[in-house]
Length: 258
Image 1: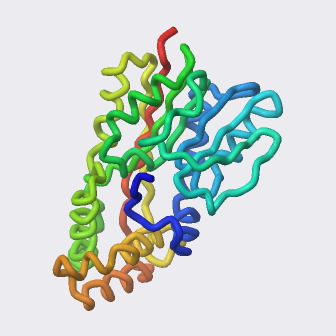
Image 2 (image 1 turned 90 degrees about the vertical axis):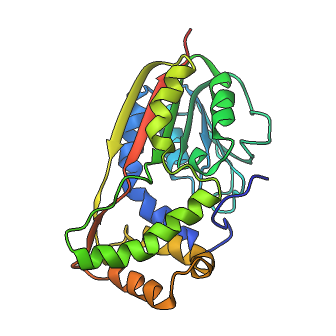
């Protein structure tokens, strides 16, 4: 099974899913623009708690199907008349089919060192005319805040956290090359959408930064981050005077040629 940076069994993943839900309307818009509709056969990769998979199931209706896969499906269990849940490792396991009308993954390939090979497998799993929609954070985009004091406290932890991710094979700048990856593989009608959100301290969404750092705290302390810096970082995220932009979510879609 391919290793994910964060432990899927950690109960704090519930907070991560809730925080990322702020981007669900953007994912819905990208998928709708790709044309997904009644009767489509879809594959949702890295389904998490199943929010996008359930939306797709509603969209394709009883004449369609949605296969929702993850390396660990504990957050989403049980099949329905349209939605099927299955454990699957997109790196090591064979694709479940080669005739999907739509394949979608959000914040999945960025974690996989084998991401280039995975894109090849996904393209080959589409039917001719099928749509591939991938969405990733641009983690190298600077998170800005007007206060230099706030920026210093934030960067003291956030920059080592990004080093931690990079050391484990996370593609911090992967989102920036997605469109070219699609073009290089001959996909047509490549479309790019980008969304970033201004988050304020104390808001539900900004807890994403906290839960990510909490799960990596042991490694950050070993890398030289002090306990005081972590405490200041957590306090900053609860401070309503603190604002920071989220990482941009880059959504790219393309069509396999007929």
